[in-house]
Length: 539
Image (cartoon, rainbow, N blue to C red; front, top):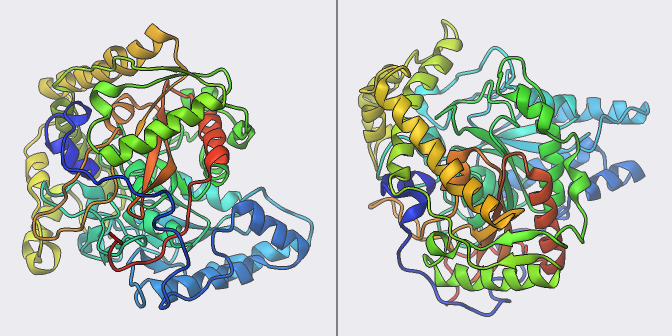
């Protein structure tokens, strides 16, 4: 079940049930790509690998960019046809050449110098690429200036390679949607098994990095939209603390939970990308206190012994039991953490209020209307839509192209909401924050003096179903999402060839602890394996 569908159960993280898949041998799903997928010389390379190649002269930023563009051309609209990328940057090779000239002159901006990065198509860029949230209603829309995240990446020497497909409007349009589908890009396919779902809403970012379209991508999350596709696509995904990454220039759902986050094949690459994305943005005041508490370089957390002595809680009551396959893999992960010297407290009682999911959804409805209207009005006179009401009207007028599979019930519900001064909004916002923080994560961590919590991220990917929409096991994203606290997922193994992740989450601004823990676990297990682009899983 994707983030949006999970919320709509009205129970959030508190009622997880459903069918799940049996365990399979750990080696299942590994092996060479199928014959219709060409071999790729940059397969599974890291940022550090690419920097070494550029330093030695084996590669240039241009040659690397050319190879990734060729990879996208070979796999995205032909071959397995992943539909993970909406458009590539027509200026990418020129940017790469300029960065090569800087390197030749002795200037290297940092770890991302000359590194291609993909961006989810809700992250604004003031260039020849559009920013549409996957919606035909915003087709052709180009903001007047870069988002803060795009600016930070450009300043760090990254090459913005293209925009990734996503669940349209970040999966906040319909209660019956299929994750990974947008009216602009069609359906994103999971490279591990093409009939399985990528999850949402950062679907394209997940599929693209799993398929080696680039070293790293930026996704965004309101509740689960970084960690869930990372789970389904065998990736490391980091949902940062609220305010650590600026929201300026990103098409919103809700300011109380929205954040961009890195998606990568390794913890080290995710940490490097997070470092490049963070910083104080005067246009987003929430980043000021975050900047004071943040760390300038998250790669300093990458220590193989980082788990030693950490106190880790296991909240079994609400975050286990949805998927036996995922539970079994996380049991093994817990054993690894113990072997690494972590102190595991098992179980711990993480029991926020039953109304948390319903309260959260109401908050998102109110904030979506207010925040989207503000974003659209900020696009200026040439904006293709000026308000949520305009988008609703566009969708109705183009129903055959925009709503062939599911409607816009969430949009219609949000449009009925009043301003953010409405008593109901103020009440549910306070209740959801208290439920996730004081009565949830803060409470259990203080009671047991914990450094982190561990749980399954979600179950293995479910089959894509355009007729009935999303279904499947729930996940562990809601509490860290509503609280605004950090959450990281790391590959934990495979079930019938489908990747499954283990989640670490904890206190506000505890990214260094969580990244260190995730890195120690990753280095001890190395569960990441490249996809095989199977038409369906092997049973």
